[in-house]
Amino acid sequence: MPTFRYGHASAPDWRDAARSCVIQLGSGDASLGFLYITDVLADHAAEILDWFREETGVAHWTGAVGIGVCATGREYLDEPAMAVMVADFEVGTFRVFSGIAKAEQVDRTALKCGNVPANFAVVHADPSNSEIPELVSKLAERVESGFLVGGLTSSRRQNIQIADGIVEGGLS
Image (cartoon, rainbow, N blue to C red; front, side, top):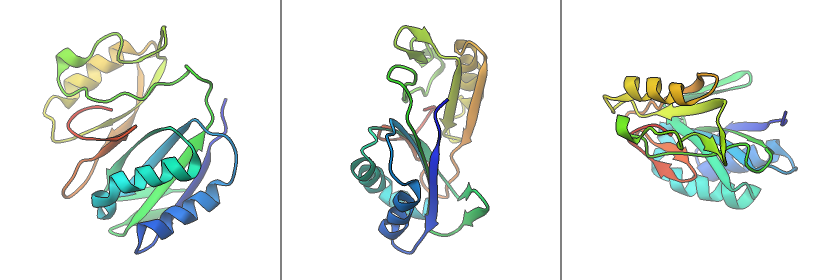
């Protein structure tokens, strides 16, 4: 099982918070990152994602925007903040997906890692999509264990999700 490294920080300039997170992450290989930012930073989501990709060398990222973010021993609300985790997974043992906004887009290939069906999924959803309950149910049917974790984005303006890029509107 991979070991997760993590960091979290708040600062008026997102770059300062991001640098603090990278220092907390330390060094080591990682193939997948989780990035959660407060909605105060939503306008900079693409820049933040690009910055973490370049600074850490981690190619694949998932996450979301929230009114607040929680981290070990700390909650950030109504302030520019972020929480980041990275881990090194074997090639082919995970897949970042996005673009599932309608029931007919849920198919058997959405949650495959190579030729192997997924056993577990971390899912982020846009609460403005009225089909989310049906989408989550259909997606759970496609996971061998039926086990999904994750949550709804929460923002006063932009329900942004991170799935190897910035996406909105459905499940990722």
